[in-house]
Amino acid sequence: MHISVRGINKSFGSYEAAKNISFDIEQGKLIGLLGPSGGGKTTILRMLAGLESPDSGEILFHGEKVNALMPQERHIGFVFQNYALFKHMSVYDNIAFGLQVQKRGKAEIRTRVHELLQLTGLAGLEKRLPHQLSGGQRQRVAFARALAPEPQLLLLDEPFAAIDAKVRKELRSWLREMISRVGITTIFVTHDQEEAVEVADEIMIVNKGRIEQKGSPIDIYREPLTPFVASFIGESSPLEEAGSLIGFADAGEASAIVRPEFVEIGLPGEISRQTASAEAVVRSTYFRGSNWQVEVESGPYRLVGYRSLELPQLEAGDHVHVLVHRLYIFDGNQTKTVENALKNDPMPVHI
Image 1 (cartoon, rainbow, N blue to C red):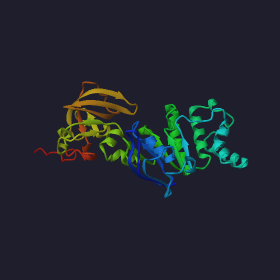
Image 2: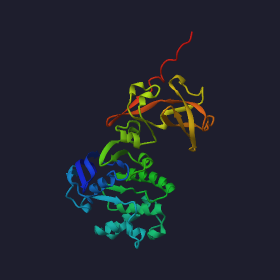
Image 3: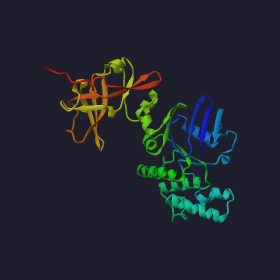
Image 4: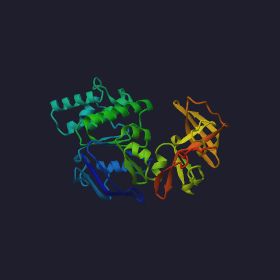
């Protein structure tokens, strides 16, 4: 299903949950709605589902306006974060429920349910009740039940929020593979950046009722368009008067952020371009498994960078050099990437 949203607005009293939101979603795409709690993600999802009505604007499925259609008329499947399974029904009956409401034939229902049991890895569990399943298995039942009537759009409201971290990572991979096989347009709400980046074809960043940016995970990470996106995605350190950093004089008094991967921290002689670096003092180090996270103080700035386990370990109080390769500079409500102007200068020649 191709989805078009045109200028939708939604308020609850004085609270504006959606402000002039417009976007398009191509058929078969897996889209993540990512943003902080209370930003408007679930409101957008519920308006697409027909559980809330926009105050103004249009929602179109395949070019047809659906604002006035009831949820059951929109050909959607909805998966809630708390599963919402029927506790007294078996796995089989939970999955079959929507088909029975549609008055499908028993043979057709049996064939469809067994097909979904195989697809979701639940074969052999069809007689169990929800309380006899793990959290991951219950969520798979919820997915299978939503897919049973063959909807054209699948909506997921923080589908992994109630599941422990290890199972959540397994279900992410499973969801992406399953959606790819089924080929259904899918939108899922999450506040987990890692989840959105790992699962989605495209991400929409939602904040204070607005779409801040829409694009592929890698584009949003590398080229954030607004200060909010730059600050929200990934880890970052805020900076004031960025022009005081070596190599960034043109930034003047602008605010900026720097990500750890933009920062090179090393002992004397380890930094490749020492003339573009500043002296710093190590304030703390944290072991991250694959590397060290090092926080340093350089003049008025506190900066965080990563350091390879192959290099000598740093301790608090060590004197080091820090080279900032690039910054995200804030220019009003826009963000631009600025490279260190000195790091590629030719080395001076001493005669």
